[in-house]
Length: 149
Image (cartoon, rainbow, N blue to C red):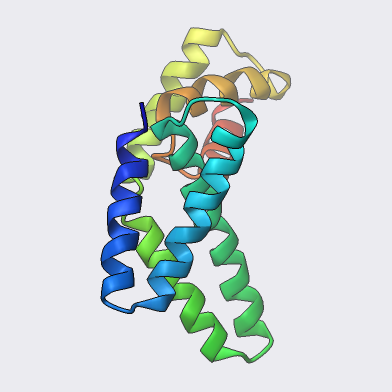
């Protein structure tokens, strides 16, 4: 059984092809190819979690590319990356606010019994399992670091 998000991507790619929107087609096709590579080609089942992780990684890569293109004075390429990033962000779940993530961090610190920065890995693992794509890892890391003495 294919993942619902994967099916949505396939449908959106077909619609973009009919509309001759090459930027959207290329961005979606890249996500589909990477998701297939990680699942079907590896003999695993396609899941929404895998597709979401591929999309999140694609967004992060585009953010880095935008910064590099802007620094190099290539506004045209940065603009293309920005369009692709916004397209991919539409497939991600709504992001949690910093306050909501801070509350989850506080719960995770209590649940794991963390007492110092040496326990940061345990807390990070707990928090990332709870937020699953709804918060950026950098934000979580910063909040966990601030929560531990």
